[in-house]
Length: 130
Image 1 (cartoon, rainbow, N blue to C red):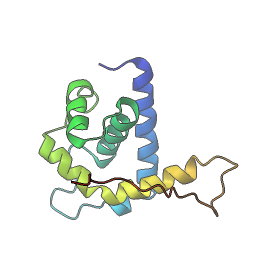
Image 2: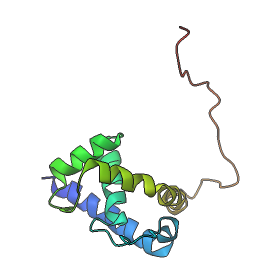
Image 3: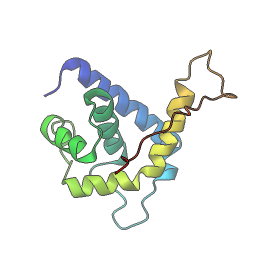
Image 4: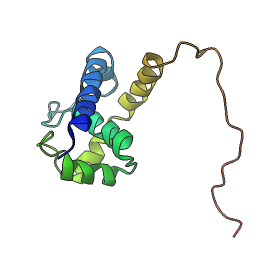
């Protein structure tokens, strides 16, 4: 079980995603198959992913699925297997990109300029000299 404060945060994330999904996200992740109405909805998968990343600092899909299996099962009883969850997240990549754009525009502070951006020019070390 999760605490009441975390439950409220989970609900806020879910309602925000449902609102954005009905407005524009559904056009970025349409399912064109016989199974176009799965038991675990795209909104629920996106909620699980965002909640686990934000609240629990879990960044790998297997960690997110394990967390959902252990603590969010009462909220999402149709969670299913890790393979199915991973496949669905991959299919939602377009919707996650659009959701990122929506989050940036919806929660931008008033003193933030959309005409300017900042880029960090420090090189990222990807491997050692060996």
